[in-house]
Amino acid sequence: MELKVIEGEPPARPSKPPADPSTLEHRNLLEGDFWRRIPAYADVDEATFLDHRWQMKRSITKVPKLLAALEGLVAPGFIEDAKEGFGAAPMAVRVSPYLLSLIDWSNPYEDPLRRQFIPLGSTRLPDHPKLRFDSLNEQADSPVPGLTHRYPDKALFLALDTCPVYCRFCTRSYAVGPEVEQDELEKLSLKANKQRWDDVFAYVATRPELEDIVISGGDSFNLRADQIREIGHRLLDIENVRRMRFATKGPAVMPQKVLSDDDWFGALVEVVQRGRELGKDVVLHTHFNHPNEITDITARAMKRLFSAGVTVRNQSVLQRGVNDDVDTMQLLVRRLGYVNVQPYYVYVHDMVKGVEELRTTVDTAINIEKNVRGCTAGFNTPVFVVDAPGGGGKRDCHSFDHYDRVTGVSVYTAPSVKPGRYFFYFDPIHLLPEEGRLRWMDPAEHNKILQEARDRAQARNR
Image (cartoon, rainbow, N blue to C red):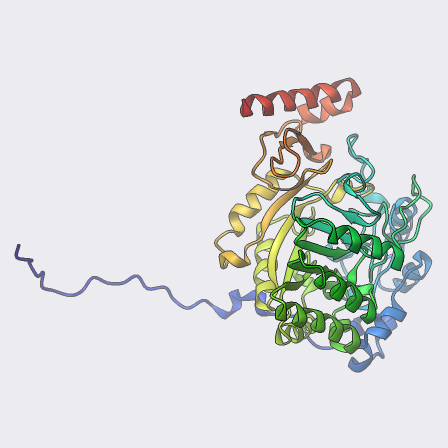
């Protein structure tokens, strides 16, 4: 067959103009001596501010001291509001100078970092009636103290119970941090203890299916260099362990440690490199929730880790008024990628006591994920998950077996984790339509709501 050649100009190729540099907001990192905006740090030079020891020593752990530091920065009414908020908060306070200096104190009520760490009495909402202590049921899946073995090949090692800062929304407020007056139950003690650690190592060694260990707490930032080495090398010596993750909020709230604590940094790199020699993967998992937490100091810290061959991944928590809109989440994801941090998970906010105003709906998560997907490379696109209350583990937020947007009940199954069981997540009542709010106001309706949701999930799976 003779092919015809069509003469004329080749078809025009679609042309995409270069992006306007002003649209590349993810590259605009906060620089300079921004901490001098805080009166208490007005005379602090860069070398001092970048010293992790100074940051640790100056971290505020008493509510009166924190409120005193805000004098002159905010109106007296805000200080009274915060005092009332702390009076009802179930979590202790610990705020680093770095974190304090990132908050916009000219607009503290709306600031996304303030929302995460400083509670207010005026925004407090009643907890959901289905909230339970240790909502993820980690202790029920704990064969030895401080180890949660839920997934077939993975375990969570809670090595200690302290952190560089304390987040109001912490899932493990049942164990993390010092006790506060509002604790209804005595906190579970998970101190860094050699005998307890030995029991964990012994259990892992006798479970050939365990290949993946998450070292958390508390926060691995608070482990000493010798403890990083002990945990890292002990786990690497166990033949079945193939992957290890050190989990820490630290880079988001005190990146100075990565830059100036050479012993800690060296210990982490040593374990990473030995793991690579053994064909085992050792990485760092961190926790940024908002683009404002990523500064030029962050970029320097992440560059040091990247240059040393340390892979860093991020796990965010979806929070109302913090990152529950498309623009903020897209900016967070792109900024993380820009500083060589791989977005991994975004958690729909766990059901935690005292922070109901920070929770949002599963529907919100689904919508944001739809809009985030495609804004950057797939490997830098996080998965939005619900950590199913009751111990079902992490489920893709859109993988529900049933979701009633009126009552806010979503039902999940976990066939590879706990087959045959149904797990329920509950949207905040104040965000439901009136019909749903009215049903939850009547305690006699609660079991009916759950039974309806279970019946519909079961009907789908028949």
